[in-house]
Length: 152
Image 1: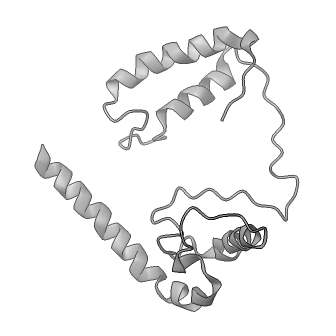
Image 2: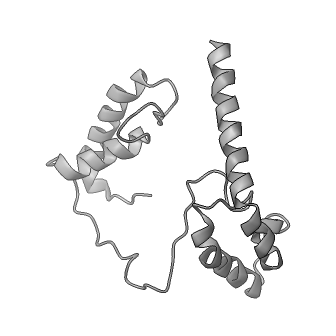
């Protein structure tokens, strides 16, 4: 998320112009899964302009590393933790569940019943299933790619 003052309208117009020039070549919206460098085209455009444009506003200091005992958890991995844990995401299990525990202790209403993968009583089962869940996700991605090839 960006918060940009209206005095930087020229920068936003530059961003829009760059988006309009680059995105028409990409038929999948703002992502380019075939990109060797970075698949999120809109973010790459914004980052390049923030680094190199004379119109770029000054950015605020990055503060998310100030409190080492706090964490911001964002999972771009698939499957998501509420779908299952993989060997690659397992190292985040305790930190992720600390957030879930905090929400429960605060009495925050969950949008859905808590999945078994986010319940501590199933920790051992989640750990045992890490590899099978990863392989299932890989197989699903492969099948999706195969289906897309045959649709063309």
